Picture 1 (cartoon, rainbow, N blue to C red):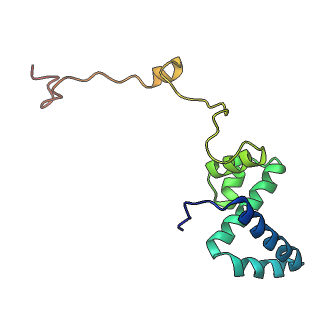
Picture 2 (tube, helix red, strand yellow; picture 1 turned 120 degrees about the vertical axis):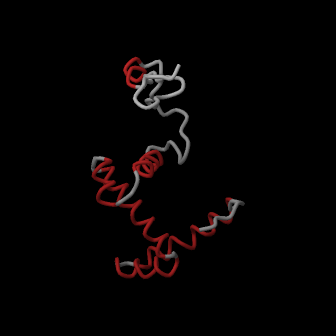
Picture 3 (cartoon, rainbow, N blue to C red; picture 1 turned 90 degrees about the vertical axis):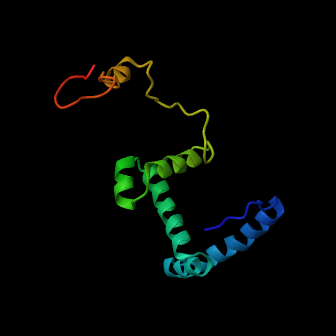
Length: 131
């Protein structure tokens, strides 16, 4: 799906939302809302929106990422981004998030990453080296 590079102005965004809200309210029933969403969005867009709504509910109910990922077939990264939005940290990069990184400064990681020494020219017919 191609997205326009230029974002909507605040005025146009407010106008679009003022058109959308009465239509959602007028739906009244789940079946009418389903028909409205079918008319406005593609199948994929509708599926994405519905999955995200379910993720927000599941996060509110303290469901684990693994369960959400399994039930909705959605990545942990997407779940994390939705959680960031819900916690008002924004969507996308979050410089304030504490991340656990594997580094060579961590002794346990460095020990597991030690490379095995091997001969310069490799092995030759069972001999350890030709040098």
